[in-house]
Length: 82
Image (cartoon, rainbow, N blue to C red; front, side):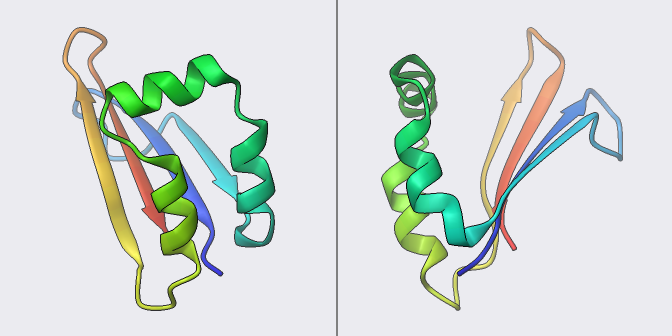
């Protein structure tokens, strides 16, 4: 099972300011612990958490899944399976 990596970049930066790693072994449980408001926010951005959990079981599903650019905040968020 792949680890979920969430990286937050400031505008134009090559290195992330924040990295969150959710180990694949606890991804399913961790996805159930996310506050409903956060899950709704992800859904509004087109991020289906349940689908990410399903993909993490697939050994061929690796790499960037979603990249969100928040122009007003000058941020870029990259969600990947590694």
